[in-house]
Length: 375
Image (cartoon, rainbow, N blue to C red):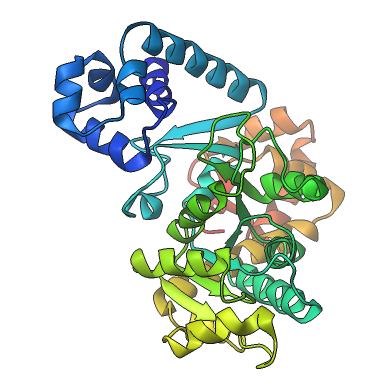
């Protein structure tokens, strides 16, 4: 996205007292964030009811100060390899954009493309039992193996177990934080934070320096459910953030699943309440994935194909692997491969034949070769 437009979105995002719903209403009314920032006080007040502090910040010196802060946000993001994605950016996850109050800005540490995923939320109690953590880890492992991206909030207990289960399976996982991405919360999950952004993404709607205050977590829960096709509640008391996430999921038209626990455990009172209200009972991952037959089939096929390719590449000899590294998805002539690889013509010919027999290389007319693009 062009720098000027991103700066406008960030400036608008930083206006005090301006939530995502009001911000999106203003942009829809005026046509762009630039037009909102250029609008007069009377036009702004007429478009949407605004607080006095918001009107003041949108004009004159207030706006210039916010633009300066927005520039600092962009600088800090670039310095820390964090992507800033406004809601009209092509990389903004389409599933999240469909909710009532999508975040105006997403800060993403890791792989931004991982947000466009087949996601499944797993949430539950911070003070989880060993049973709850074991179940969360097992479900996350199974879902990740089937190609789902596990989405949670990186809190202690169930969230941490879910992220670790997905990572243990070699799958993708996304953590949604209730603070700025320059703050790891809880601090004890510092290593997990690094592991998640290497295998998926850590996400926040909050500017840098935003502390993890209690009221931010219910708001971030709508993003967990908004990125997901459904939400699995593993353990939850009758009053818990996990039930807030489940309610968001219902409002957003997403599936809600619940794992049963001991009937005398306060840790499972909330999940049992969800089951009484119609949430689907989960005894294993099949109870989840059967609700998404078309998605599951596609994801299983993709996972199988990736593993098949990985297995083939893993069992190459050292010379085969070296030559394979020089072959691209675009056609290369035999002479180009010889020149780039440094192998003799005879060696190259023998190795290409072996790679072709293993299904990794396709021969083309004119004695050219390319990687097998079907893998």
